[in-house]
Length: 212
Ligand SMILES: Nc1ncnc2c1ncn2[C@@H]1O[C@H](COP(=O)(O)OP(=O)(O)OP(=O)(O)O)[C@@H](O)[C@H]1O
Image 1 (cartoon, rainbow, N blue to C red):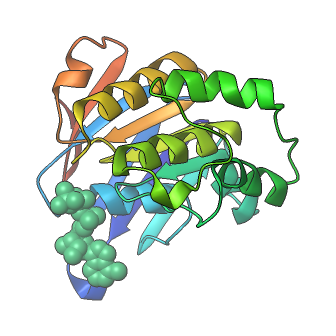
Image 2: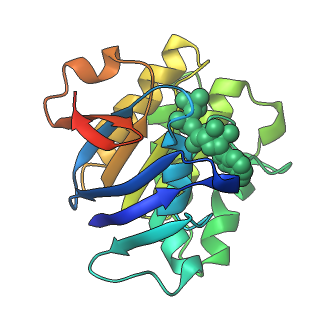
């Protein structure tokens, strides 16, 4: 998914957070955005996924402004620090969004293959998701997004506060399985990206982006 920011500004209640941001995230590109607290990184991801509206400017997706927001949000999965988990089984957590979007539910064998990768400690499809640890809930939310076959993955501080094992498993999954997506990480954690030459690192500020 190619994502173009055109003169994008955000000034809630008249306070300028960023102004006239222009940038193009290329299709299949990998990005890491860093910047001081409050410069608008999280807000930017919610604008890209059409969960909220910026104050002015445009976000052009693959050449046009999204008109079907439901479809756009499916294609542009937003992962946040505190994932939303349904008080249902692991299976239902994985299948409900697919059903909502009228997408085929993968076979148990396929689901189990992904579970084995992301949960080497073992996870049953019938387990209650609310009883999982924080790191496991993160990995489940990641798999749920992945199964929707999005074109972009927007990861907002998904590693913050996670134990090392969960962080590694989530990031390895993204690096190995999501190479055909545009992936944008907002993260204060540098180390995961140091060996990833494919990542474009950007420093965000009021004035825009500069390479890190
Ligand atoms: N709906 C809103 N109404 C008013 N102000 C808002 C709103 N949403 C965000 N802000 C303000 O916009 C600024 C940017 O917030 P945002 O969370 O996007 O920054 P951030 O760069 O992600 O920060 P951090 O690194 O601390 O998470 C903050 O000052 C925040 O208070």
